[in-house]
Length: 203
Image (cartoon, rainbow, N blue to C red):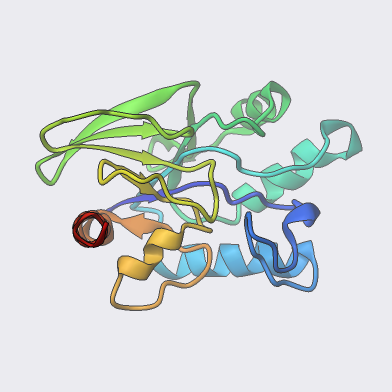
């Protein structure tokens, strides 16, 4: 199975607490990290692929951050394809590449600097860290992160970050840190389209 996520921000203590940008009410980063790991591993197996759209963690390399981040990533099930976010420095990327392992003869970690184009479920998916404005398109969707607890006012943009407010379009509550399936994204696309349509009718 294929999953999508973004903006895990492992070890980022400044996100703790109730704030408007990325409310994460955990007592410390260890609790936050473990919650994300547990939620991820409940649904992802080593047969699965997760597209992580940037901002993996925030910790300085010179404080042992590279080793600590790699240790966390090794606890996550599945293979992971990363798209570089604004907090993903070249040092951690190079470190992970050097320590990379194989899962069923495929690298556990792969990296892309800008983005990826996928075709799934009759959609053309543009996977990027930053939101893209696609304009008027047919079946094209931008899956992105970066803006945490905010939403782009366009039906072609779906925020797949773990702080995304667009989880409200799902019927069942999603555990914090759990990546999204394509089926869930289809529901989010339909829900956001309907919500924006209703908003336009009210305006």
